[in-house]
Length: 113
Length: 112
Image (tube, rainbow over all chains, first blue to last red; front, side):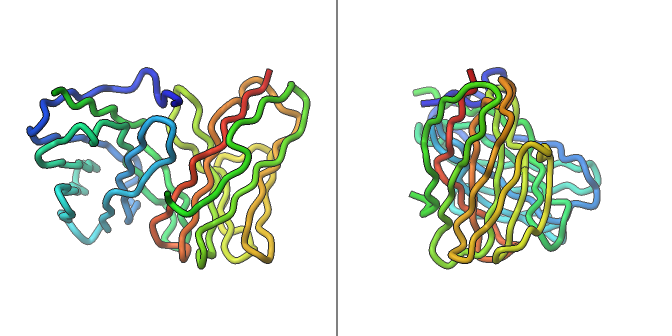
């Protein structure tokens, strides 16, 4: 498949450990954020979202934390599995009514056996 | 499978040419978005349509244009192609303009 982001920062974790992927967003006015996962040769896949009136949101094995003070978003993956290996993008929207998302550069997560 | 269909999957063309990329959104989705992803860059938002009308515009070059048809499928037209236009082009769709989008598999455009 295609290699996305050949020079992306990489996070390597052991299988079964927890992963934390960080993202700094650019616009303090952004009010909706999404984490996407992109596997090689595939399109981005929605993982979890959060609105700016929340600090934390949990999904299945994933948690997103939002710190508006420092414009920081993080994605926590519990008990990381080999299938979690992918590039992870955070995205912020600058438009309340549309989906003019600005994507971060991405982080490559590599799960070690 | 996200339900969003993009054709073709791969496209190789020469500089100066024009190509059309096609996207069929998920059944029931009214919004369609186009993104460009280069190998060394993240996803760049190009343009969004909602129910046939342009809703938002991002970093879309004047050489590029798009439209959404009455049956809600969308086409992205790229003209006067340059080497730097080589990239993955993704289409995404969502039910409404403020909901999370589902992405297609992308079209890999190579300009030679």
